[in-house]
Image 1 (cartoon, rainbow, N blue to C red):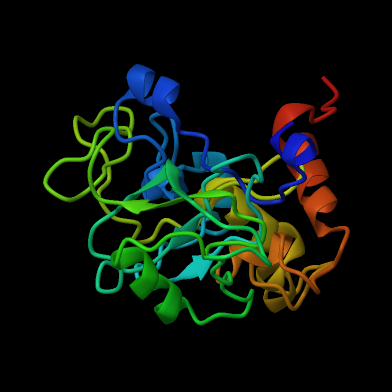
Image 2: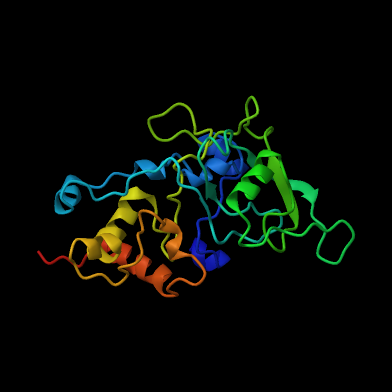
Amino acid sequence: QETIQYNACDENNWSDGAVVQEAGGSAYSTTAACGQLHQSYQDYQCSAEEDAEAGGQMACDVDPDMEMRATTQASWYGAPPKLFCAPKSKVPKAPRWDPTGPWCAPEGQWGHVAPFPDDESLDTYFDYVNEGGSCRDYTGIKAGGWAFSGEGCKGGVCPGSPPIGETEGRTDVEGCCWWGRGVIQTTGVCNFGKLNFFMGKRAAQEGRASIYPDIDFCRNPGAICEPGGPPELKWVAGFFYWLNAVQTYSSG
């Protein structure tokens, strides 16, 4: 629904005030990349049977140094920017997106600030986020900027909702590269590990047939949404999840 409704391949940051009231945390915290509504995507576990099939571990490893930025975001007035992950050495404290301001002048009008190009370096973007920048996150942005206070923030950091079983939410985005992608929002280290095992680079390396032998879904989960990638991949990943986890068509 999210992908179709907003034409967004990547998961949107939908942790608004209503979600925060229910689940805690900060409105539109960057930690949405780590998991929304009490979820922790990097802690998704595969079953013992799945791990055994994979020879010990099906899920992807979490790399704390992994950094990436999503390809898409919602486009409504003040919509939060693309999700991203980064080590704490580069983004030490999680801000939140403030959709109420400032107003961002359209192209051709006085005060317009050009958005970052799609190929802008992540280091430049992270510096902009850390400085509380605004209006440069995506083309067509209408309002909004990064903030370290208000709507659930404490002491200059804006935590996410506490994962199930925890009392405190995440205050950084380290290792948080496993947000939903594709038509059914493939999410978490287990699901990306399955893609890699059955149809990605791991399958090819271990001598199994692979339709995407050059794509390592554990090193680049963003491959599902990347421009220039296989255009059908966002659908293939969704169909795989459906057949693997939702409606397996097992005969009894």
